[in-house]
Length: 224
Length: 234
Image (cartoon, rainbow over all chains, first blue to last red; front, side):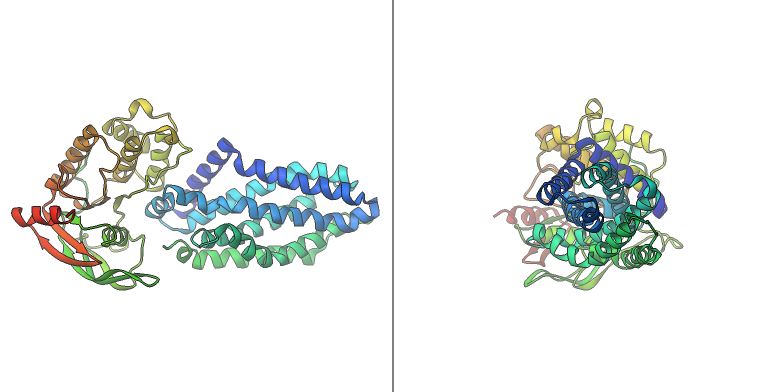
């Protein structure tokens, strides 16, 4: 069986188990919602202030929430040693990563799309005129977070103090994504919106570099 | 149910060491297992049985030494040998039903007509009427039955069973013994770790004792065979 068909079978499993339990999605959505609402109440920003600070706040909330979401990614596979069963069954271990990072990207995008309207209302920023560009940034950044986060989740799942290790490894590594996606979002929410191609290019390159690294070295991350 | 359509495969462990940090779990294990042998590994807890089986499954990489599979037909060198493995844990998903679990792994393994194979195995392990129940609702014994069915999905030439009777009631043990007997008689190579003498250990054609990661006894004869198994629990 090919890599892609293995990955699609596994992606189906990831989506089915999550939509059945809704554990990750619920936790993540509630977390981001709380952060957005709390900041809005604390600072009560004007429209100008929102345009300057809200993109950074939004991506910071997404990043922290993603560390919550990615934590159980491989931990759940240890519960019944299902990771071993997967390793014995797939033709290429990369299929396991591919399915998990695709599922995590879907979950992150869903969360972001659900919370975008709330963010727009609470911070009084017009998102509709630039929605298609925002969706592109969301996709590229979520993919990058998922690729790096899935790899780090595989590493941290085998370590002691695993709950602490993932955010400690992940947040510094994903700082470039935070900066680039914040800058691009800020440019899109500007009074005269423009597309910051440099930032979008950076996100795309980040995704490609990390995906290639995961493809080359991912197998070693799964070994006991 | 148990198809003879496979190529018999043996295993060769050459001078295998496995170290976990400061602990040497296996020390210079050299062992040749012929295709079709049914080998029982005995030994106290921590003697290295599970590590040896996980190395045979290629889930664990030895710190030193090599594992190779022998007897595979020429021209099949690129085809990975995927042993069927039953471990301490059930290796199935609690959130999925028995049928969903088996279908998932059947599809990953590229099993022909996965629905038919899963249907046949669910009947074989006596879980047809619970096919749509989530595994989380199953007893330990029922989970073990699903685990055994999962290991048999692709009709593997090599079967690795790590204390397979764990959690099974006497009826389940009898069923498992019969299943192993049929697998052994069909020419499959079986490696299993057991504690003490049982209905299942009597199916072995060879007994190997491990102590502190080393092989201390290896026999195919009746009297010694029994003493290896019983001494393991002494």
